[in-house]
Length: 107
Image 1: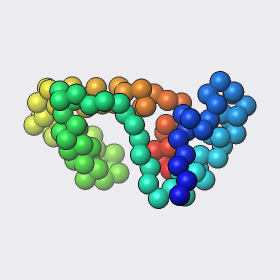
Image 2 (image 1 turned 90 degrees about the horizontal axis):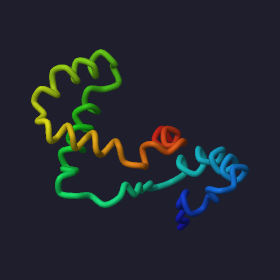
Image 3 (image 1 turned 90 degrees about the vertical axis):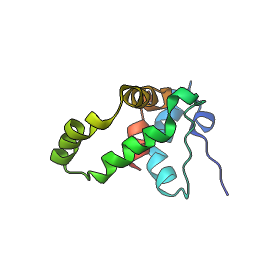
Image 4 (image 1 turned 45 degrees about the vertical axis):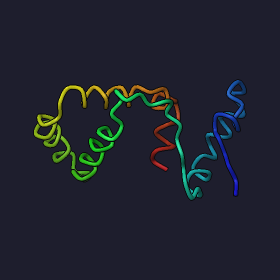
């Protein structure tokens, strides 16, 4: 088994190495059996189960943009403010603002 941790395996101070490694991420992530992401410590107020319910409901909407938009209008009405704030806090974690995160998620 190979364990690859991008923040450890890529010298974050060496932009040349970083470019090379980013170019290899498609191979690294597409060949992985499992990918784990550390998002930091969770506080009880984060309501992580509720956050993942939110994403499951969006996923059930499919990829049809009209359905997703419709979901936003109709379904969020049933979500309390604390749950929506939890989703906002979750998506504000540092992992989501890294430059190449979209590439990692897609792969």
